[in-house]
Length: 296
Image 1 (cartoon, rainbow, N blue to C red):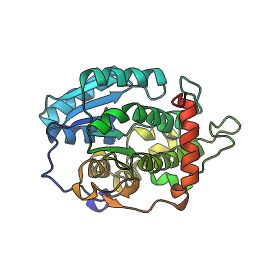
Image 2 (cartoon, one colour):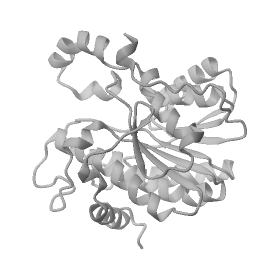
Image 3 (tube, rainbow, N blue to C red):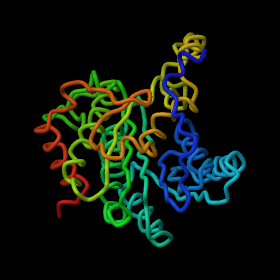
């Protein structure tokens, strides 16, 4: 079944000693696998997770599997700007450097819901939450350069459209439209961020991890999920294989001069044309600044 596991990050010699890494959603799935590998390679890993109990359980597993003692958990709810600001404040009280930020956490096809500030859950969590987090960490990332910002998007961006007239899905809500829009936002954000950071030594990468059977599937129809289990087992990547492109973007030295691009199966990949629309990327940046309060 290795064929279905996609490209693998094979550079086993890269060490992350004395490097500091933040991974959102590191208590499960590809985030946890990325945390294990980064810790194994010597990084100080900070897990940003919503549920403290689940985070601590995962942290112990990461410590056991990596053999590292440098894994730390900080509460982070990307659906709350207050929580994001608190996370950053606590992190900066503990560390003066940050070399890799992995924007991994996300929701998929969930029932209609809103973040603490009233944003549609996909747009608010998958995009605005990571947008605010990244911007609040830009100073420390720049001081620590060369550094990297890795944002987990999806092939789903192919079907995404930025609905400028209803970006918050107030007039019409369809869960898959909301999800694919948020994944398109991830790529446009990474692309525009690269232009803003040119010359700073901070590079940005967006990626498709592959089709993975993880907790992201929890909102699928239960009957559909049960019927699809054999397909998941055969064709879907394991979380470990799903983390490979994340690790590639976080560490691979041959892409150290690349920024603002998109990757899949540990290779450079062309995103859909509408994911390279710089005018839309700038529009999204400007409205995201306003909605998160960064423009005030």
